[in-house]
Image 1: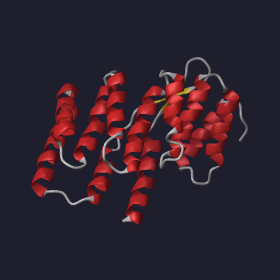
Image 2 (image 1 turned 90 degrees about the vertical axis):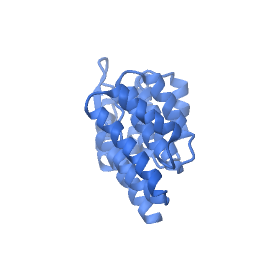
Image 3 (image 1 turned 30 degrees about the horizontal axis):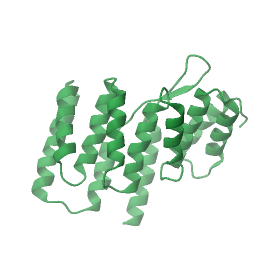
Image 4 (image 1 turned 180 degrees about the vertical axis):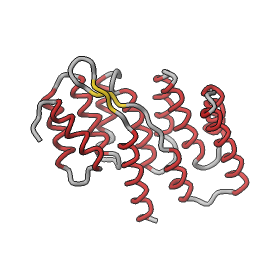
Length: 217
């Protein structure tokens, strides 16, 4: 099970980096990160950790499918309402999984404060630590562009020893760029680039950011 969990963690990390997109900031080449969702990957891994009641799993799974269908049909409010019901009344891992999707819908609709609050709730749920930290990371991704710098820095610091350390470092570098501290940002991006355990996609992006921050490869 440990090997399976480690493999899942690597896959989620790679997907997180692959699906995040960055765009140049208008003033001096800074990047902003968008919210992504990893529900399919996490469902496959998280639900494998426990034995669920088949009937409850089927009911919750159907509701989850309904919500996803509403989202695909362009009805985000309906989808969010169904996901919210699962957050409140779902069994086992579904409250967490539904919360990820609901928070994404909220963020996509411009309701960033509500999305961050929901991610904070997910980060406090009784799930594996790596998933609590993932929710905390998503909150940081939403806040790094315009959130209170001290608050964002504190949130990032709490993730530097987590399974999502490399992503947290990237957020720290972006926050340093936002503050205009290009020297600190360059050092952070260099740390990502030189770490042999950094996922390839993230390393390549950090190398670009390192150049933007004025550092040398």
